[in-house]
Image 1 (tube, rainbow, N blue to C red):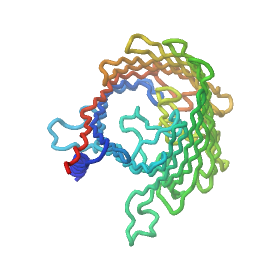
Image 2 (tube, rainbow, N blue to C red):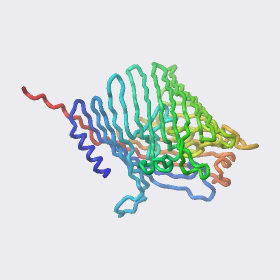
Image 3 (cartoon, rainbow, N blue to C red):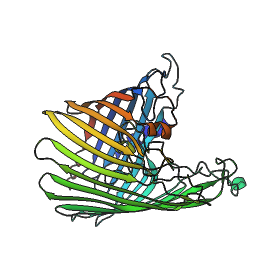
Image 4 (cartoon, one colour):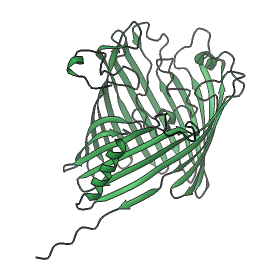
Length: 440
């Protein structure tokens, strides 16, 4: 059924006639080899490292004309060898709809974008497309957008999620069709993003209100009637006072209810300085994410969580913090430095080091210092549409990290290595010529 739907959409686009049309077909194929020996958490001593190849394969269909555009992206995300060679079907449900949206423009800078789409703003700390993850991140949402030629942009977004369709017989059953409340699984959302560009300065304001389904306090999993609401708000600022010099800052807060009985009050702040005098970039930054010592037992959660951000981009590439982990924990202080060296006409080397410490106490007599991570990423463009990336990361964990991660006897070496080929060719770009006027 889905294949027929996509084919019908393609035929519709090809048959549509109008002014300044453009139809494109693009691919995104990226196999990635990974060696995991302490990725995400400490690996215990004596446990073998993991090695696998994962691949994303996307086909993207785009259509544009003067006042309308549409986009459909389907993808397969799978591990090499996870389907037997002669299996008649892929039983791993690796196919999915990545994006499917329509965009109507209705004059004077206003437009509306409806459907499944990636939401990415500023440095992607709060809203990001999560492109590192093979599956990416999408939202089923409706957007009202405004932009003008003076650098002013405004997005207002709405989303409402259900697990299924409620029928007349299940209309008042809270367990049918409701979303289970979880960090990434909201029931409803409304947000606004306002951005303005000036000559040497840009600033954004963001406020998002998310509602989450209540859970049965007896098991913490079964959805029950009612929701709680949480607000995330703040600003992202970038100043460029001199040539090659840039200052970026984030200040965000979170309030509302974590559950019906537990309040939420948290904050996040970042300051980063970068300088690029020539072909080499130097950067120094500090980020703090508030934490909680007691996990809400005092009726309040004070641990900040970047709700829908591209968290792999921050706090070390080994993903020890805020990538499916470290929620409602002791928070984090991250002091980091980086340099990006141009190693050739089409290649570069990133070197980045992080000094990690807990934002709140891990316990009496326990040092706040968690460890130091070093990340290396080499990038080489091999074709106009193909890039090779090779990475290596090493975690020098402290005894406090062992306590935080609950690993009493970790291996002496904690590292992670990977190699990824990103191939994104344009397969077709077609703009039909306007039909000649008929002779009268």
